[in-house]
Image (cartoon, rainbow, N blue to C red):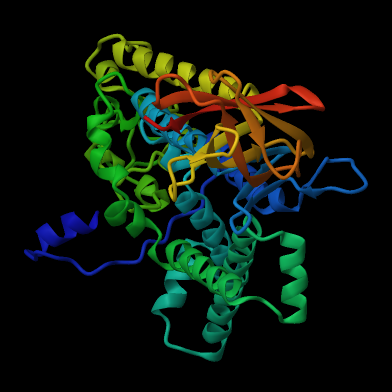
Length: 465
């Protein structure tokens, strides 16, 4: 019975939160969830420790978001703030992916890959390790305080706290080189910001996965509220086969259910006990369902013992329950899929074909122009040379669309280190034209040691009227 049902039955507007003790079940879908959860956790905890190149004697952290230096290192690729549009592109891909997979199979993200689900699963396993199975945990919480109970609670929270702090440490390790961070922790020399974010993210993990759990999914996550707008009658959801299961009721294993007028459901409530959000899937699809499929595996275990057909609770669609054919590929999923394919393809093309050199030209606003003794006109600019390559390059500047123009600066060429931005003051001089005013010019950038690294930017050149 859900909290909302309890509130209605008791005649109350609000019901006090009741702790949910999810029953441990095993089966095909729980194996998939375990593989997904521990695979994602392995990526999260292991990725900051990878060095690039992978087998090089000397390297740097493979994935590092260096905020002070405004550099983002991802497996040998370096992204600067000028590549911010790629982040926006990734967010659009994530949004369209959510629409696509929700239209296909409901809340797959929630059940198998959401960080709240993944860390909650780990915290529940640690709780089982210390306090025992569902019945033992319920009995322990109802029991009066004793030394044994206190020791179990302390051990559980110590495990939770250790994993939460390690999670916070790993999170900060994506932004501060994790080996340097570990050395600072050993010396007790953490900076204030590193300390704050380790504790903050650790506390968030401890609170969300250890205490709030299903309340985050039911009350805080917006996805639970608008998922109904993203699914239709052909979307795969977890459903109870009422036509086969009703009327439900207990019976002996050897009893003839048909002679008793009973369906396949033995009303054991294992599906409710296994549900991490505490709902009864037999009441129909509810927004609290996170599609973890624990109820399917729990029900299948009972059907196996009773020698009944499996999948009384199963993945199905509204169309199938009404006797119609299910169409996985329909207008909605086709449009989402085509858009997702185009976005992903375009993103990888943009990353692999992006220009590793960029140029910004800013005018000196103190004066429009200056006329030299020889009659030429001079404009002053600040030029920002962006080198997105990991290697240093020697760059040369030139100007076009302005007859007779030359560029004068402190150096004929400019050496820019890898993943750096260099600001150069340049003076562009040109003969006084017959018609004064202003005209557009193009400043070009070429790398002397890498012909493929070129860039250009427009600027305005002013002359006397």
